Each structure stands twice: as structure tokens, then as C-alpha cells.
Length: 206
Image (cartoon, rainbow, N blue to C red):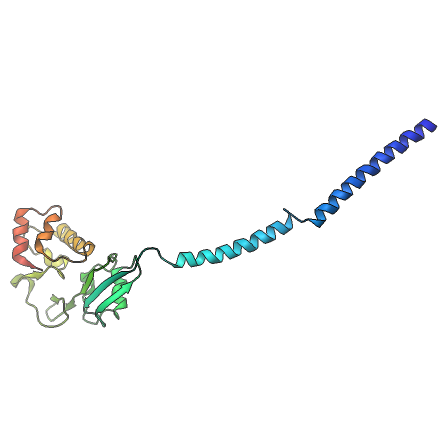
């Protein structure tokens, strides 16, 4: 019986030691809340601050501003500075918007602006013709040269050798290069050969 009592005492002692170790570990973990609830709370706060900072980064656009000259049928023609990535429509709005007689359908409002570009908004006059400056009279397109800076697809389509597709290519080329200063520049467009260039020189003017 004595031997059995000693064995029981040893078992009880081992259990007591184990409980003490577990209790000590639990107390240490309570004193140092590391990776459980406290860590998530701090991480959430940090993430919230980071998210707030990130929103400012999204609002600001990279690249340098562009300076453009807005002329023609707009309320306030002039030179304006716009953020990089702005479109022709942004420039028109910055200049006070198009006037009531503006022929905005003649320009590509979605074209991206480039630094130093001139945006000319033509205006309609009596008879449906267009002029770049917004005043004066204009003859019918078939009776005189067409301004290459304001020509529409319909007007270009009246030129011999120019179809709707090539006419649109000319408009796109003009928008991409911020205007055309010489008819000879159209020689860079695919589908325009020497004969077509002769017809363009006869019917177009810068």
C-alpha cells in the first residue's frame, strides 16, 4: 500500500507541474497580446490609413501639363494649361464651351491633346457651310477650296479620288497631329497617291 501511495504522489506531482507550466504560459500570452486580436486591430488601422493615402494618388495624374490654343467658335478663345491626358472636349469646355453656332461635329472631341496643339472649333454659317473663325460668309464647298483645318468627312468625300474611308483617315490624321499646316502632309496617309494629291491640292487650302 505504501508503494502505491508513493506512485500516486508522483502522478499527482507530475500533473501539478504540468498545470503550473500551462498556467504560466497562458499568463505570458495574456501579458503580450501579439499576433491574435491586437495584431489584426493595428493592421486594420494601418490599412485604413494606407487606403486613404492611396486615394490621393489615384486622383493625381502623372505626366506634365499640356498648353493648348483654343480658337474658333468658343466663348473664351485663348491659351490654356490642362492636365496631361486631357481631350479636345476638355479644352473646349475650358474655353467656356462651344457657342450656339459651333460645328462641334466637325472635330474629334475625344482626341487626346498634345502640348502646343491648336484646337479650332469651326462655326456654321448660312447655307450649312463652315468657317474656322466663327464669322463671315462661305461659298458652297463645290465652288471654292475647302479649309483643311475645318473640312468634314462629307466635304472631303466630294473631292475626286477621296471616299468616306480616306476622308475619315484625313480627319484622324489631322486630329492626331494637332492640325495640318500644309496639304502636302496628307501624302503620309495610306491610300493617297500622286493623282489623289493633285486633286487635294486643287480643292484644299491650309
